Image (cartoon, rainbow, N blue to C red):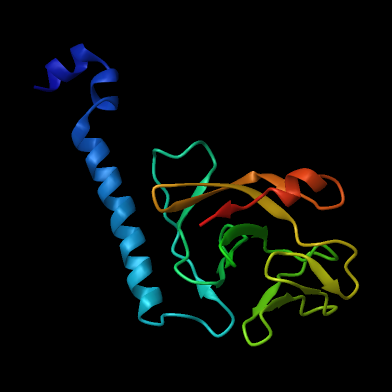
Amino acid sequence: MAEKLEERGDDACASCAAGMQRREFLRDAAAAAAAILLGLGARRADAAVLPRVVSGLLADGEVAYPVPAADGASIDREQEIILVRWQGKVYAFNLSCPHQHTALRWQPAQTRFECPKHHSKYQPDGEFISGRATRSMDRFAVRSAGGQVFVDPDRLYRQDQNAQEWASAYVTV
């Protein structure tokens, strides 16, 4: 059998339906587990820590997350991405404050982000409120499909440099 696979080449495995089903199963299982944990209240004081759901089916470099079930913020510290669902939209932000790159914190009681270093404040959609920062939070390009939000960490938009792209960097849910 190994000889037959070698004769057929690499294309035989690339089109294998069993491999595709396994990937889809793993992706869906991870998304379901994340939803169950969030539903059971598995949250940290400042934000939920998202399990990273990555599939070989994703475009190079994209990171996938389950669509958040409710308004709030979740932080993926490993990827330095903040995922926010707010008033029917999902945004992905850079974890760093645009002022001096300190990790931002979600303040659920005030429904806003705050920089612990110089206390710049931001609305849930990333808009600058007050503090030493001079612009809003930096947004990543996002898209959605099949109950997932896909974040492209290689496409970061600054409000002061890419105003139009920044304003449209969200998906509606």
